[in-house]
View (cartoon, rainbow over the protein chains, first blue to last red):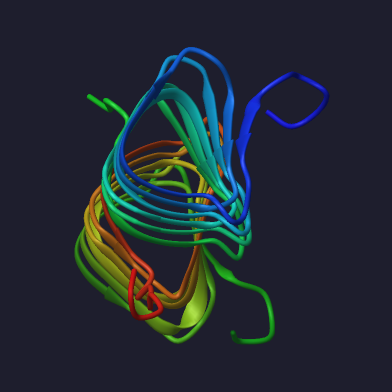
Length: 109
Length: 114
């Protein structure tokens, strides 16, 4: 999800209260409150603070996220990430050191 | 965690009931009921099929586990594991490929204002 791929970056000083909808990769380094709908990769960077319900393809959390997430592919809470909320995704990874509280539903029979 | 070799419950063993202990334990077989190894490390191997509530210090899950887990230190769910149940522990690691359904509680403290 990192790398040279072009992506929208909402920098550390950006604060949004409302809805974000997009069809390109999105990196959040600032503060978002509301709702995010993405069909691509969404990254909450280490400085990012997000309080939102999220619907996306892939999600990586290195910052702080409060809210429920539905991902069509994968959710990763990285080692410095902190998340409170429910996750619904076929693949979920929680790294050593990550903090998480919530329900996880991977569609296990 | 205790020193010395861990105990082993082999593939061909089935246990139904309560299991208590004060040594590290590897389970390859089937256990149904409760498992309490409050100061020890429990390893559920790939062949293990567990339907139990579990209380341990550390647990590594590689097999099938159905039930709630409480660990005073760390829970590791490896890529081969299939887990249905709730988990409470200060540290939880979930590997890519693991299958999980349930509630996870790491006692997260959020800063005020979030």
